[in-house]
Image 1 (cartoon, helix red, strand yellow):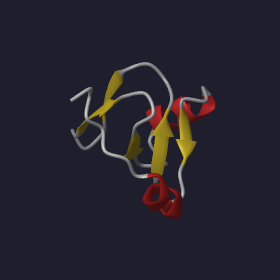
Image 2: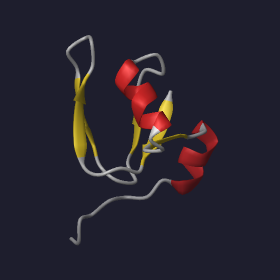
Image 3: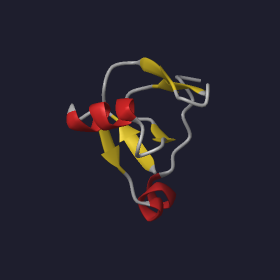
Length: 65
């Protein structure tokens, strides 16, 4: 499932060994059944995002360039 992350910069290692960096306002795909993902949802750091919203609001991040 796709989520928008709203917490501080962080990282997570999934059970399959995949490492994911989380940045504020970033949209990322995470497994909904992962315990840490459930924790981030409960804390309000992850918000579900609909696929159509992604297409409508896609912007290029240039980091000031």
